[in-house]
Amino acid sequence: MEKKPRILIVDDEPINLEFFELMLSKLGFKVELARDGEEALELVKQANPDLILLDGVLPKLSGWKVTRLLKTDDEYAAYRDIPIVMFSEMGDVQDKIEGYELGVEDYILKPFNFSEVLARIRAVLRNRALTLRIAKREQRIAMVESLNRSLVYFTRHLKEPVTQMAADARKLAQSNAEAVSAFVAEVIKQSEESLAAIKGLEDEISELENESDKELSEIDLKELEERFQTHLSQQKNGLREVPG
Image 1: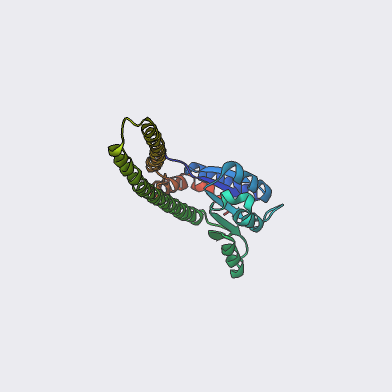
Image 2: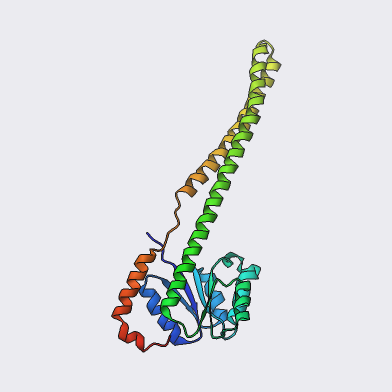
C-alpha cells in the first residue's frame, strides 16, 4: 500500500490552515496543523512529517528559530533531514540567503498561489524520495562490502587451522590417549569458532535480504496533478472566496 506523504503546516492564520488542510487532504496528503513555533516542534516529534510548510513570522517561536532548532539542535537530530518550505512576507534577498543557509529547502512569498505551492511541494518531495533512495542504495552497497570482507576473512582464517588439523590427524597416534584428547579439544574449539563465524555471515546475509525487500514508496505526481486540476475545477467558485 502506498504511503501517503505527511505534511506539517505551520501558520498563525486560521484561514490559511483551513485552506491547506482542505486542499492537501483532498489531494491525498496527510495534514498536521500547528499555530505557533512551539506547537510545531511538538508535532514534528509526534508526527515526523515528510515536509514542513512553515511561516517565517509566528507566535512564541519564529519560523526562523524553529528551523534553526530542527537543523542544528541535537534534541531534533532525528528530524534534521525533514525538508522545510518557508513562507514569508519579506522579499529581501538577504532573508532568502539566511533561510537557505539555515537549511530551508525552498522559499515562497506571501500572498501565495496554491498552484505554485503544490508545484514546490511536488518538487521537494520528489527530491526527498530520491535522496532517501540514494541513501538506501549506499547502505546496501556498504552491507555488501561488509559481507564480502567477512567472507574473505572467514575463508582466509579457516583455511590455515583446517589444514593444520588435517596434517595433525594424519600424524596422530591413536594409541596416544593424551594426544587424541588434545586433538579432539582442538577440533571442538575450531568447530565452535567456525560456527560462530558462519552465524555472523548468516546474520549479514539475512539483513541484506531484508533490506532488498524494502521499497521506498513514490508519489504518483501525474495522478496528483490530475486530482488537483479536477478539484480546482469543481471548487472554482469556492476558491475565489479564500485569500491566497
